[in-house]
Length: 99
Image (cartoon, rainbow, N blue to C red):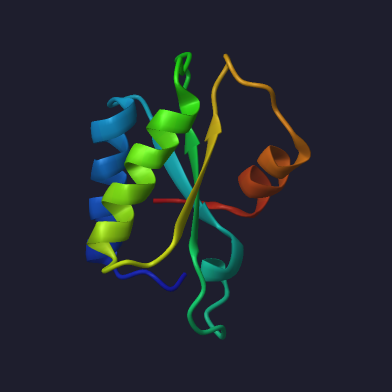
């Protein structure tokens, strides 16, 4: 995974700041390839609680993490009981690694 331990811990903390202490976060996508260069950061937030404003919450986390990573593009996918699950959720869950 192309993220330092410090960044991993900060991203985990930011995720819990935005989504609550019961939220977990996985990194998936191109950041999992140690041979690749650049690329955005794909995050899967897993929360057992309903998310009432998913677009707002995802945007809030994406902005905070992007600032942490000095402007790197961040995509946030949310897995919550209140949201429809799509094939991308299965892929992200299967390929992702918990921070």
